[in-house]
Length: 629
Image 1 (cartoon, one colour):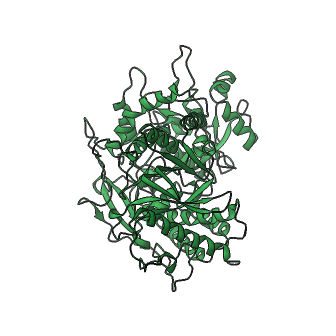
Image 2: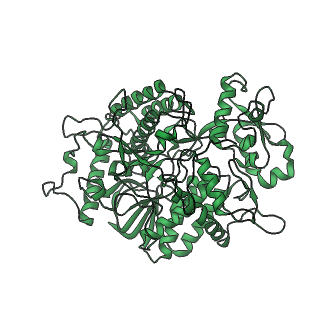
């Protein structure tokens, strides 16, 4: 068994920053990651880091823009923490050597981004995330922080208390991709989940193949609520053939969108009369699809993004990577012709419920980055706010897990007196775990809808609750070894790829930018069918080393749970807010829906409930207003 003070699961931006922060506080920290850190998806982030650095800008303006962008569903303490801490964290990156783009006078450059009232987005060309990863990985190496590279964490080691809020997390179970061994990792102080997004729930996404929502799914099944999962961001400029992202930086530099008729539709049709292409992402994505559905799209599939007028010198200086992406994936020379773009899944605003210090309702379990929901983004994330989220809340989670007192959080986790149950949601099928008629093998580990455990979960001591740290980790390892053995022993059934494709197609068809009740219910039916079929899944590759078939099979279980969470939240929220658009409900309902959608796994019987949004900030209360750009 490996043992450290703090375990960080994931080696992207949030994970690296959390590990550095924990190490700076004196903790013995290790990173456990299924990818080498510099291959993490943070490296695909092109745009930049929002930070109030210039005269005329301040954290309060950043906070207001973020609250407005969230459509007043962000929690003020989280938003203000982001805005206050981002300048210091950004400067720290510069001091560590991050090669920011600069003005002629040597200052770090800042460009306009969608939904911002001030040009506060710092950047490093069109490869900001790439440079951020390498800068922080250098610091990890410099400090001698141990990295368990290509270890896929498949389960959390959590105590067996009936009430999730009484449970404690003592470590994780890791699968060594190189050898096939399954081993335990014990955390003396805390586990920080920094596993990134869940884009593989959809079939057209900017996310990497590895972005399967592992951390969110593991925390959910361990008893931590998922928050606001219905809010999925669809980025307005992705390449049609692949989903590869074209940075918002193109529009920040002055790139324009037009339809097949050559109209600059953001202005021509009144989608955003003031900010045009630099309206928030949800507004631009809906505008593009509206144009396409009205017959004004190019080949009935996409619109054009044009940056030719910016000139070759400016493009190659600030957006050179975009030229390579357009040429490599679409055969388009961005200096000579416009680029085809359409909306694609990009970011999950919801995630693991945490407070502003990264803590969940399970003692010893933290989350930071895209897998977490503080909630800083509410119903819509502004461009340039994801990277500061990684470094701000990654650092806070690392410090707190290492034992540093960051003060009493203003955001509470778990159920409180203000929690409100959902009592009458009409779903076409029962969500949650599939009932197992015997104690033999369900592919997902044998969980049953009555909340009991299969025989593989019962230790030789007769099944007494595991609360002691070493025993908790040991039992988790035994369970996971049994699950993997069963998957590997089967030689017939259904393969994960077929189920994953069906799931992705349904989510893309029914839970996309435009949603309606019929489609959401159809998605839930499809997800249920996939979940039931998954009980007969098997792994075709019999090898134990570098078995990607096994990894993808385990990942697919996580995608099923998260797809269901997204669809349930989307069906319940009968209003139009931020990225969540409902055909039957074309208005924002502040009287009913200034609240977060919460979903608890409840041992296989998902339970939907709500908690109020916190709009009271340090110096002001944010009053909901009509959002226009």
